[in-house]
Image (cartoon, rainbow, N blue to C red; front, side, top):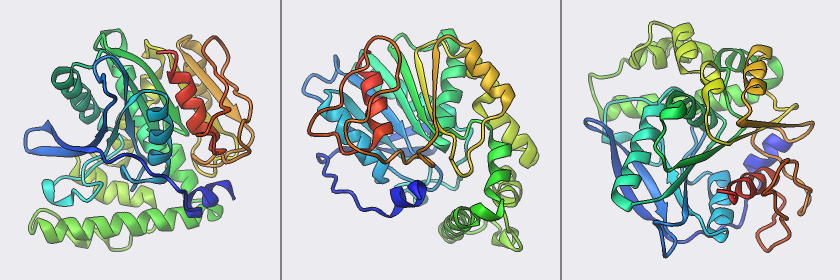
Length: 323
């Protein structure tokens, strides 16, 4: 109910008009970022927010956390993954869960161009996997401006989560994702004739099949197992060298975190893993002023005009206030 409610309930969110910026993440490939700057952008904490599968910078959780972060005095960059946010026509490429280098390129751009002195990463679902993967890959060699990371319901173990999505109780979610991904593939084929074979879509009934026939095939993997293995942040989460917050709900319908990954998380003293009984997938809708579950210094009250009951958004912003 929480998961569906977070998708269907319209939120009255009005964020300031952003600066639109196209950033080249590899030769010939650009992504669209919506940038919100504080008056003193160099000294404010800058957060790069990465959305989930078939989301965009306009997803409600992206706007919700932007509203709260701006009120807390932070710069916000709402990042669109490749093809997202209306950018299908920019290049004949697809996006996938392992593109941590794209986020790294955006981080380098704002550090060099805007002179930001403090940087944090935030990700939801698929985006949570991407930012955790980047932080783990950076390890102790991250840019000195990189201070913290937060992930909400990250798809950190891709294979088991994709398989759980195929369970009968989750077919509503899988059908939606497949509809959206199929539509995007057909759009890409129209925009770039000869680059994509839409016949590969025939007979696809699961996300695993889509990732095998489409994602892995067009994104340089040998198959779906290679893709899920190489793109999962689970392999590097134990290398994260900055303070990190992972929020996860035990009743998330399809994101699963394996016992081995949990062991890696618990072995890393930089990572705070907060698991709630309730919350669904990236929803966490409740009463305003719900108590914080973050331990340690820096947790702050959420009694303010921006406390709208979206608990995870508040937890993340309150966590980042420390940096």
